[in-house]
Amino acid sequence: MEKRIWGPRFWVVLVCAVVVVVLVIGVHRARQRLASAPVWKERPVPMETDTVRHEKLADTLRYLARLEAAAQAAVSPRLTADVVAVLVNEGDAVAQGDLMVVLDDRDLRAELETLKAKVQALQAKLAAVAASEAAARKDVEYYRQEFDRDRALFEKKGISASALDASRNRLTSALGRWESLAAEGRSAKREVDAAKAQLKEAETRLSYTRIEAPFRGVVTRRLVDPGDLAKPGVPVLEIMDCSAAKLAVDAVQEDLMVLRPGQSLRVHWPEEYTGLPKEIAITRIFPAMEAFKSVRVESEFPWTCDAPLRPGSFVAVEAVVREGEGLSVSRQALVPGADGTFSVYAVRDGRLVKVPVEVGLVAEHRALVRGEIRPGEQTAVGEYLQWVRRHEGLLVKTEGRS
View: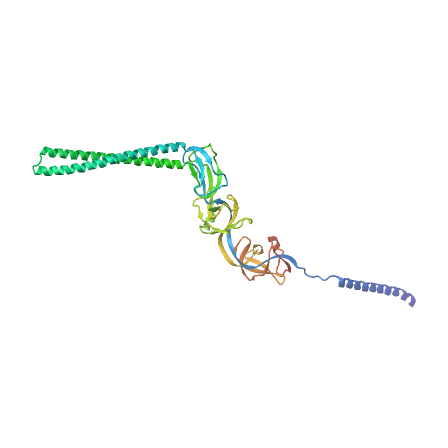
């Protein structure tokens, strides 16, 4: 009886023992796998950063300026004549007074010779009248002395009244002839003066047949050839002044509130053009709006035609509106808040720390700020969508900007 009862119990105990052994082995293996599993460790997030630095920044207005010569002349003749010779071509340098174009002067030279002969004839006539006037003056002096003597004799009863009257008549006739010759001399002198004026005018017109350079410069266009008919007001050459140039920009109406003559312009010449001024001043602002509702602003500076950059080129310039100095950060480091405030993420001990800042002057790439940041400190930079992945205390691996 006891033997029957022990049989089932034995198998129950054996099964339980097997289960216990299996569980123990499973727990042991689980502990082994858990012990061999890698331990979780926080990994740093790669983050592009920029250095906080102390510097001067400027708020500027940017324009694309046109390089122009300070003065250009369209040289045209003052009379109508055939072109005999053109002594310059495009690109030739000329000094003030250099002969450039010669016009046909044959008719003017013939007129000039005629006027010279006329002046000589009138001068000879004037000399003859002057000699006659001098002789008449001497006659007047002689007859005046005769009349004075006869009048004294008449008072002493030495001559008759008729003799005195004859002496008076001779003096009167001499005076009349002298006055007539004097008037003729004045008329002859006026004729000489008029002829000399005509001669001078002819000489001036003859000088117009030799067209000279009005200033030192370079010929930019040649518009006539020998044989062409030159006419007043029709250019034969165009010359560019080589002593100065100007940068001209078209400013919008709103910019006139901050632009003024004498204000500094920063010029960004192409890198290959060295030796040109980096800063120039605004020379003049035109008083009226242009057709496209813009205002022309010019800045002159010394120039030579040997400069490699040619007029007509476009150059970037900046008008300095205001300047400031202090700690600056990249504009991409500024994180705007919902209430209009700003902050930056400073990297301290390898983690991001959000620092509220006040933004001052904002330039193209950087901004002046005030807050609990230090020169040389790194700040996180990036696009707007990157801000949502940042948070206080984030472990980062910095990647400085080049």
